[in-house]
Length: 232
Image (tube, rainbow, N blue to C red; front, top):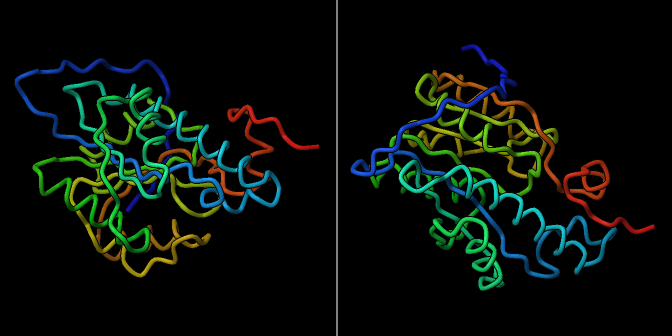
């Protein structure tokens, strides 16, 4: 198996949308509501509970804006899988930035189980390509999402590695539920374990550029895209 990185961000090829043909692609967004004190908890010591929630809110806005532009009606479906209690605020952000998206609740369980359930349900509804992302990566661009969907015509799995050892995106052309089992979620081993599992399953993998997630105070400080006023 060959893992190939691509940073091609040249002109995009326009796709003709057939209004009579239902979309065969879905973008799943796993999002936590901006609950003060319960989101971005590793940022609270540096920014306070309200500050951490504000940073999370900015990440949601940026992600939903990208998602809205990446999912024009008729091209691909979009679903926000949410968890948390500030649902009305999350729904307001979705309505402002990607109103075409459906908002549903995540099932209980670890991240691997939630990914497995969401992705399997998408394929069960007749879709051919599914890409799943979180909301922690302000460097995510529409072009990267388009690359991921396009590459799923040539590979079984598309991964976007994160600098902390996880991944900010996974795309599949079939459920491949085994990829989400026995993974040390929340650690620097996630990406490597996923690659190893894909090797075991004889799945072909394409890699997007490595990007930085925002999980810790130092991630905020080096990321100019967040436009956060840092404490002295």
